[in-house]
Length: 276
Image (cartoon, rainbow, N blue to C red; front, side, top):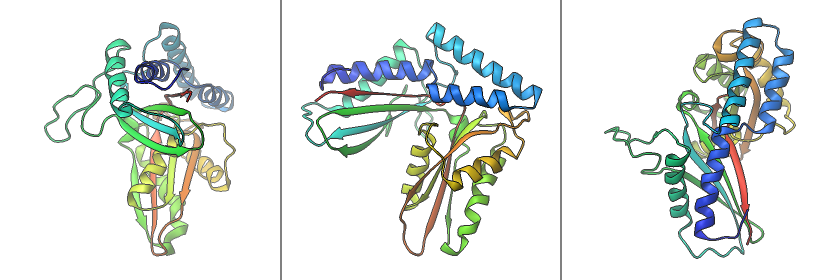
């Protein structure tokens, strides 16, 4: 989508945020359509139909699909041989400011104590995560996370002897969330690492695509969650979760952190590559 320079980064951030806010990814649309075919509850089918209509309207009109336009979370993969002679994070911030005005986005960032609004940038926002990879390119991916689903997050530091309780904790977290995160949801789980690493793993998992083959635990969890009967928008039905994604990391021999991060049906994300 362009060469590595400051102006291109700003422009691409604006484009990606517009795409993420207005157009659901194909794997999410496919999962919602499959859920509609499987759904046995008439009220749940009606809710899924309304979600589709909402997504179609947002795409056709080029407007955000939800009034909570979320906070932007960036995942940047930087080629080890890429040449960057400008403030990359500053360019990302400028792109967020422009996108807030042009799309437009609801100003969601506030100071945690005073609650003074700062638009969509501020202390620690936008969140930018970096990884270094082979090559000369820069991959910029963005996801926007609304508060309704984010507020349902949970983290627990298990003892290693409690490994059999991990699955129950994840299912109970979804059960306690009920309809608040606007199901059908994507459930991101981080298992292992440290206290903070588990949370980052869960966020990464929640924003991962839906077209990867599930492992055994992921299959068991999605079945257990859907058996809760919470259903679309919490009004009952067979479809509470579209997918459970798990990210793992090795941890201390005496520790077992587990984090759960929930994403609503509006799994808004987009990515692009700047060529080195």
